[in-house]
Image (cartoon, rainbow, N blue to C red; front, top):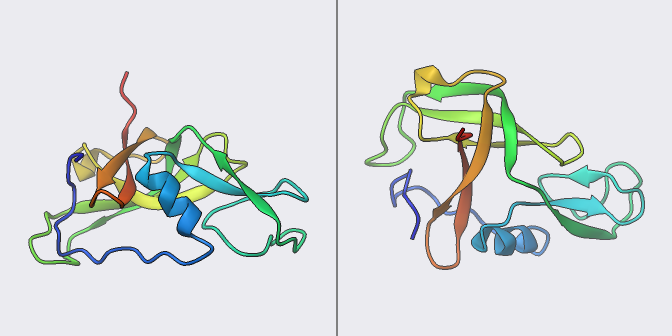
Length: 141
């Protein structure tokens, strides 16, 4: 199991037919984005239809898990019992994703030290043997 950032009381994410391949890749510690097989536009979160050309055909493209903090907020109210406060919710611009941004948490740094433009990399929080959630930490030198 990986380092835990959030308490067990946090609600577990739900998977459906569209998002299941994303969660399966995450369980393997691979960050993927959906790519339209017709026009090549990437999307995240996964969706059944391409917003650009309306194709229903897609494939999965692995990305590096590196990016930068696009924007963020510091949360001071708990969402679950025993949750450490404060914590950071950030929008991360993902490198190599065709301009996609992902909402997650920045961990491994004091919240007041997070900055817009800060380089980050994915770190996986294993919630169980079948579920891993991507978080981001400052990129190590």
